[in-house]
Length: 90
Length: 167
Image 1 (cartoon, rainbow over the protein chains, first blue to last red):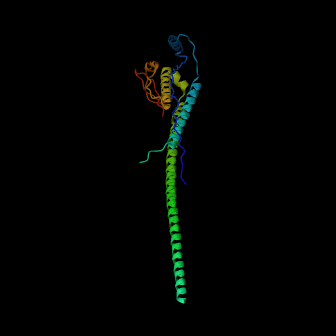
Image 2: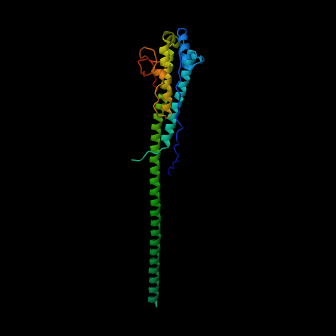
Image 3: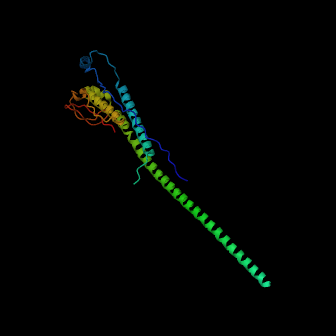
């Protein structure tokens, strides 16, 4: 009996991420006026998206979980790539 | 006359013996050749089987090692999430914001900037991206504390902007 291995080519990875920076402002009643002034100076109009601290936490945790999934998925792909790649014989 | 018959019988007997010997010799030689061929085929079969066993044993060892490494790496990938969860459970962001909004803002922006960069590195983007200018010019002045998303400080102007490492 001879063991025949199926040759599976390792394919190229998808294009890497190219992310944009995002800025958050922490606003309380004490710095609201300062924020309004700075924000209007920066962006012209005083219109923004607000998140409660709890929602910010949830957003951070969600992104952390996506990061965890991405890293684990990467590790699993690496595992399969190594598994189908013949190591050079000494 | 009897002598002649005796000679004929003797020659016949000798001829029979000679033929029998020749037949025996030929048959034996054929059998030896067949056995030799079978033997060489069996040797090849044994060699193939041994090589297959070695290959399978090598594969089993390789897969066991890969599996072990994979489990470790999967575990490591949980670290960032666990660390963040721990920090968020220890910190009350509302209290932190009321204490020093700018400090918290710097930490959040730093952590976010580093998170995006880690995402890019994780997906194979090896370019260096400078921190955004609002991080480099963060106007607050406090110590190098852990951010809500944890990590190293990378301010460039004496500010408290914190930048999060990931793994």
